[in-house]
Length: 380
Length: 153
Image (tube, rainbow over all chains, first blue to last red; front, side, top):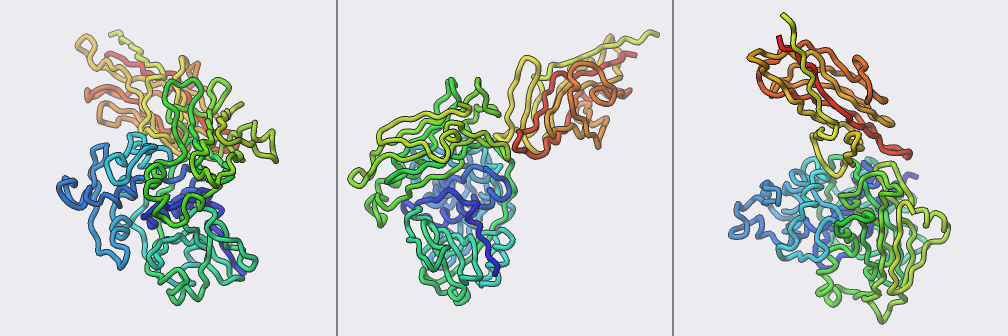
């Protein structure tokens, strides 16, 4: 019995604080493709795609779009954004997926966009670092629409192609299948606590759930009608120096604040968590999105680009610094506070330099308490 | 008639990387410019050029690129430009190791004997294949110096 599971290439589970599921699913697909083609790549940022979604007037119509049908980026380029016929129930998504920004401009990575942003306004504009890095993360052509069928889905997954699937009024990413269960596995974007683990379906649990083969072939699932399936082809990125950080919080990972920096550098520390979008969506998300603050991820296992001024490799006179602070500001009535740092390492492609403090503590992780600040170095 | 010879050099710290990005880690030290990345990259030296010396044209006799590599990095091509015109190509190379201190023909020194055509300054372009990164590290090249010998006829 054959099976494929591309979820091993996806460590960063996103939480949808509002609308934009199609972009969340896209970024899950993109992360998987990057990790397959270029291990230890940074995770893709949602910021630019969400900005295009929330401010279509910036590229669709005057007065905000100087040239409707084009989007101008900070580097002075104009990217064609031809409008296409929207599919039912997914009008904006259709346009954003099928326009050219993913091919001509690319996409920035987590940690390169403003930490205090706003989807709706100009604060979501690209930073210079985001512009500089985006061309390394581009799609090779527009997405390809594929037939919705068990045969086709399995064929693409066998070719290491995750599938972005519009289902009902939502969008998810298909990441695997198992013939013995006759099910496809998909990743959703409501954190790592959404789905309960069940004994008879080991593909379900955390951020992952499944569709049966029958649901796919009938295009009618428990999550709604299957409307559109897309696959994407990336231009393989070049490796960049990154940090992989794996941290668990006892109640809510959004309590964790993290910065990366180069020891003794005069430049500001690079704020890497929470990502900018969470600083925005709190105001609507806490109350408006079902589940509330207790229904979020506990685990954060993601990869971000090192501060630009960092020169590879880390050495005793060139140390990478991770500052971690548990504010415990969210979720206080539920919070158990504190958590643990499981992994912290620096990567440049296949060259990995571990944080020895964590290795020396193995198999135990490094615990931190509520309202505690900790600092980790590579090398120690 | 005696030939007048001129040697014009620049230090390795002046080299320019063609495609800059966060995928290259670079640092400039007193001994040269060190680059670490993966895949292929071009680097360019601009050599001060005596196009006319005492009302006479110059001939490029030799070019030099002093460098040292680590791990998988190797120089695969050297192209020489007279302004916008490519006047010489040395391709299909696989040069690595430490060639940073003394002249080694066909490793860091190449005979040219090319007429300078007055298109402009002399450019030396170096293609480096860094290969893939490995668990042991990321390949590097250090450019220490580059230059050329000119003959004034």
